[in-house]
Each structure stands twice: as structure tokens, then as C-alpha cells.
Image (tube, rainbow, N blue to C red):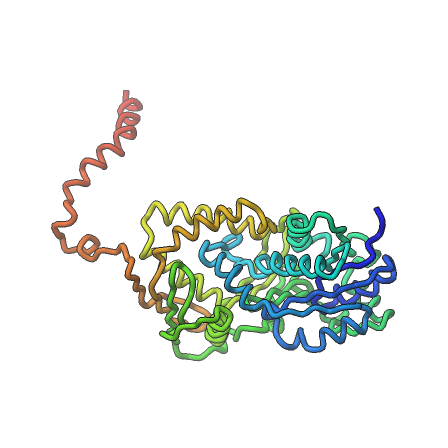
Length: 402
């Protein structure tokens, strides 16, 4: 296969993608188009990004604000589904990759690129997420994954390569953490975290206040939902999904909520350890579960909980642009229709407790649930279903007794 002549690179300005631009030009002799999506990684990461990419050899740089699209069309879908990978990880990195890769493909096709490149390592999950999106949206484009080709085998090597090619970076060999940040979360990997026997250093946390240092008073926050999607905070409606999430991020972070230290099973088969901060997302997931418990019938809720595990694994594994994901989203859209109302949570030094749950679609009947016996529930009815359910148990026990 001929080498691609013009390559669209998923560019973040971090260590890996910073050295990839000169590496591509040196090893492929190609033109490089840097593509970066603003999904809420913060001003510090985006500041000077375009100038840096051009200085290190990119011929074009595309930086686009995708925060609203990210929250509205991607994050809210995992909220509606209740998707948590291995019951702890709220898919902050996983859910962002399909959108970033989609935009990268769109820019590549619009600018006449014949190749795509990314800075994902050969050990990680992100290579799968990016490349499965490429296959779904532009299978005709060549794919270059430098970490699977070059002689660089560590981040220390990448730092040395950057120094030799005059590429400005912020990482040093004495303090190397791999971080991924967006409006939904920030992840931390590498450094002292690589050994799961080590406690997470206090220095790694960037978004959330330590629970020990949070205020000595509880704070209540009320989140309103329509059809399973957050729409209001403390009675104020938010037309912008991104602004609502930012509001809850600030509230959760101040209360020390949203820290997770996780040993997870990567798609490629190995275990890895990472620390995640998802303050607003943690509040949303907690409130969403409380509201579902009120508004969904037992069979629907329990079946949805089973599918939520499958959905989380599907997103984690990069299978976003597939018929199965679309079909599951259709199921969650229907089951979320009654999930309207508001939930008040009490936050205190990293803990969350529900204070109030309200929904116009509540299936909770005080007349039935109360310990005061009412006409709507006849206790004598219980005898019949206990006898029917217990029939095979009774027969088996009788048989065992001879």
C-alpha cells in the first residue's frame, strides 16, 4: 500500500500527539492536519494549541467547540442507560472517543486526507475506540498508529524524542501522569498509580476537594429530570446541557464527591489501575437511580439494570457506531419516558444521601405501602401465590423425606 500523503491526526497537544507530528513528517513524508475537539478539557489545555501544532509541523489545525454536542448527544445517553463499567467507572474517556473520532473523520474527508492517525498506545482501549469509529465511518482511509510502529517504548522515550526535535511539552521524567480531561470527568494513570499497592497520591486530584477538607456542613442539591435527562438544578432550568453539567461539577467538587480509584479490566485483556474524578456525573447518576426507583415498574427496572451492564461494556469497548448501540438506545429512550421529576441529595464530605424524591409518574402508593392496612391490599391474597410458588419446593421436600 502506498504511504498516505495527507493525514488527519487526532491532536490533543499532549506528549504523545505532540511528538507524532514531527514523527509522521519524518517517517511518512506526509502533510499533517491536526484535529482537536473542545469537549471541556479546560482552557489551559487548549491555550496556544493551534500555534503549537503549526510550530511542530502541522499544515492545518482544526479546533472546534463540541461541548454541547458531547453532553447532549453522548453523555446524556449513558445517563439514561445507567451505564457504569464494572459498577464504578462512569465512562468519561470511553464516551468521548467516538465523537472525537467522528469529527476527525469529517475533517479528513473535507480536507482531502487519505489517512488517519492517533496517539493511542498499543496497550490501551482508546486505539480500539478510535479505529472502530474509523472503520464505521471511513473504512477507505489508511490508519497510522505510531505507538504500534515506532521505537519509542515509554513516556521517557517520548520526552527524549520531544527534546531532540524541539517540541515543547509540560511532562517531565520525574513526574509523569497520563491524564484525560473533558467536561464529564478527568482520569489519572501512570506514575505511582501503576502499582495498585500504592495509595493514590494527594497531588493527582485536580477537580475535587479532598473529603477531609470539604466544608463541615451538609449541602443540599436538587436535580430535575425530564424523560431521564437532567434539565434543572435547584429549581433553575438549564437550556444548555453543558452549563448544567458545569454547575453540578462545581457543587460536587466542592463537597469532595466523585472520586474513584479503580482496577479495571481493559478490552485488550490486561488489568490497569486508574483514578477518576466525576463530580457532577456522580450526582446525576445517583439522582437518576433514585428517580427510576420511583417511576419504573419492577420488571422494567430490573431488565434495564441488566442491559445497562451490556451497554456500559459496549461503550467501553468502542462499539458506539453499531446497530446494537442504536437498538439499546431505543430501549432506554422508551424506558426513560416516565423518569421525570426531581431528587434532592445531601452532600457531606464526599458522601451522598437522598433527601427527597418526587415524580408525577411515581408508582409509589402510600395506601398500599403503608403499614396501616388498607382496602387496596388484601393480605389473604398472599396465601395463594405463596402456595403456587412453593409447590415445587414442597414436592421436592416431600420426595426427599420418602
